[in-house]
Length: 369
Image (cartoon, rainbow, N blue to C red; front, side, top):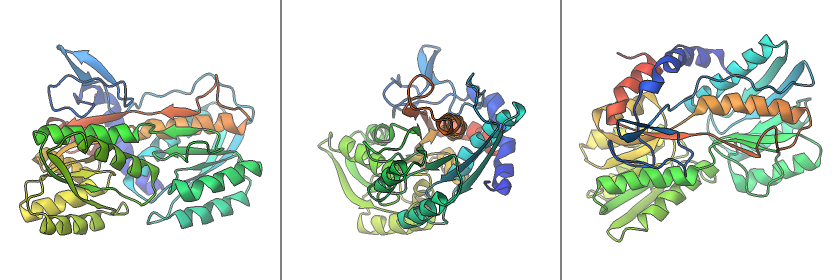
């Protein structure tokens, strides 16, 4: 089971968020506050209010199990993900709620939810091989490196294991894994954040990209979206691209290095939840005015957003990812294939938030006044 210590840290603000989050007005598709947006391409959820489109909610806590009747009264799953990190704790909260709802129906769900302290495809390989020797109904994987892990998933499926992917990173296209639950629009998220940065900089300037973990599909795809967006504007230039391995400390060190080598840097594009924090620490320490855009809901990052050090953050709906992962794992365990019961790829939303949203997000997520 996942760490109950971590669960308790986020359970209280999750309940607050379920009550108040619909009042949080946030913008999607990389636009600044007050701009009209079109959310369809990135899976963002938006509704019209006062003549402008705003996000109706960043995270959907109002989940109930669908009408599917499981074939067994007990299921045992194994989930492994990239690295121990608060982002996956939020995913686990959704898993826990689905588990509770199944329990209320008389169905017991047990699962292991394991990851290394530092992202490693080799570590993930070892965990998957170990899981093969145990009696799990479904094995779920947040892919650490698509090149390394996808062939292993193919081998497992060929050997009769029921394998799915989840979270933010799917396997390569054509992989034999049964289904994926998570972010299907990482490229678009990277493009949206970069478009917001470009607009803020009046479409001219020098930027750097902090990618994340080498080979991690979500990080690489966001970086690809960022690079393609920058390439559209002749007065924009990428002067550095670095891999911080999803480490705040390494992102901080790399940002200091980039700023030293490029004192006229105008912006930084951050492709995971850790690097906006490391980049913001470095920029603030140096008194630099580089504009930072990045991903997700880290508490320190939200403070930097509130203070204007970070310009905008793309927040993923981790709770829904976890809830839907458990629900689909049950269906896969029963021998079902993608179709009417569930999609091959279940998409979850990303919401872009700005400085005006930071205070309410801190209150809702972390109980801060």
